[in-house]
Amino acid sequence: MKNKLKIYTVLLAVVLLAQVFDNFGYETTTYTTDKDKALTIGSLPKEFVETKDIEGGVVTNYKPTMNFNVKVKNNKVGEGKYLVCNSGEKSCYMSIQKAKISIPWERIKGTPLIYMGICNVVIFSVFGIWGLILAFKLIRSVYKGEVFVAKVASQMEIIGALIIAIRLLYIILGYVSSQFLLNQIDISYLDISWDYGNNGIYIIFGITLMVASQIILRGKELREEQELTI
Image (cartoon, rainbow, N blue to C red):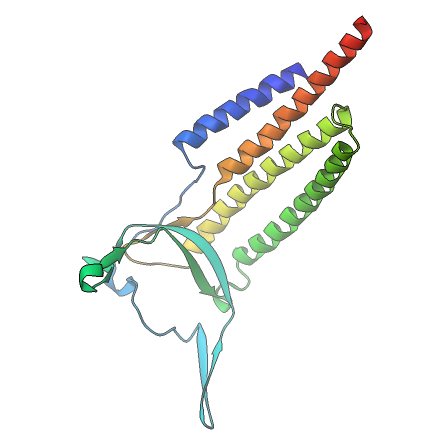
């Protein structure tokens, strides 16, 4: 128990330091200066939308897409071009830091991206349900006043490990998925990378639960030693 407490405490300190200097984001980017691939304002291509003429008007059908949250770097959208609003005294220009990319479903149907998505859902669902069950049992034990018991400590430790495992899997699967995603898009003047979110917060929370579980066990040991002494 004492060894676990030392290990978890050291891990927590390392992660906290890493969080200060890094945002736990492994970035894979793509960049090109091809003018024909620059962002423009225009109508959606045919692979995204389909229109049909009917009596009295036109019907527009939007085709299925797969969406990805990504990080974006670089302010330019073309050679010497920026996203600007020329409104006199209230003029400004915008730099994109995060965005959602939509890709036609037909283009990625049958590719590894689909299987990655299914894998994500299955793994996170299993881990998430397991974590919720343990969290419910933990809350019930605390409600009954069973705080300094081995069962509560074990549940907290498992929940913490599950949180860390889920985030690490998310990072790994996100990195693999990003390799296929970047092969499907090519936008000039923009560095695009997978948006992992703030994984550090989740990992810190998970390790904190694991440290707390060992503190509870240590408190239980000290109380038992005091009772034996008395």
